[in-house]
Amino acid sequence: MSVVVEPELTFVCFKWKRITTGVQLPNVIDYSARHVNTLRNMLERHVRIPHRLVCVTDQADYIDSRIEVIPLWDHCRYLGGCYNRLWVFSEEAREYFGDRFCCIDLDCVLVNDCTSIFDRPEDFVINTYNPMIYNEFSPRFKGMDQHYNGGLFMMNAGCRASVWGEFDYETVPPLMIEDQRVVGSDQAWIRYHLGKREARWGNAEGVFEARQVGRHLPPEAKLVMFAGKRDPSTYPFPWVREHWR
Image 1 (cartoon, rainbow, N blue to C red):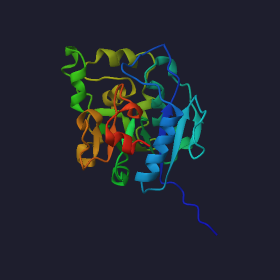
Image 2 (cartoon, rainbow, N blue to C red):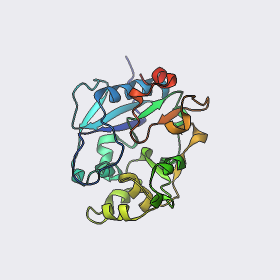
Image 3 (cartoon, rainbow, N blue to C red):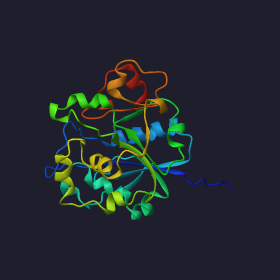
Image 4 (cartoon, helix red, strand yellow):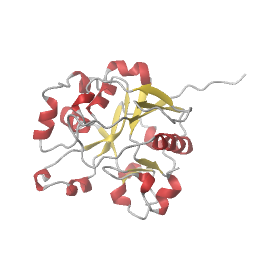
């Protein structure tokens, strides 16, 4: 009799139709089912922890049957940006994602064994916002201290429930625009609300940003994030073509 191994970790990705209301994030791309399916392939190759992949989406066509699909909720989608994603911090998210899950953007490339990245003991850990990104913004962002990149974070369900519980639909979005330390939508609120005390991933753990890597992949790299309008499916570099599949 075969033994069914329950997943220790749920990976959560998001794919939704772009809307024209609310916050409009610069330099974003439109993802396809190919991005979701490729993420599934990379996780299978490079993560040796029992896991599953869930895609929260309003566009489920052509998504691989190995991937669980959850209909996109609409708690605050009209606000634009990625504010709707903040609901994962709620206690109720446990019902969908289990006791421990990792939100991961579709614009990443897993290039080596990533088990150590996701086998962390902290109840919450999030990717570092790389200072290189600051240079792409206007001079008014010189004092930026975003600290966190919301494209990758892992948590015990409900461990930072106040991120959602204290989110105010009316006051938070304009506050995030006004506060020059932060940039983005959901990641800006995470930084503003949680401060700078949380555990992070960075280069020392093998997590890099594509602008750091360029044409030559560092041997210590395990996972590369493609922030902004950088689609790994169109990148010409040989290492991307080798690993994004």
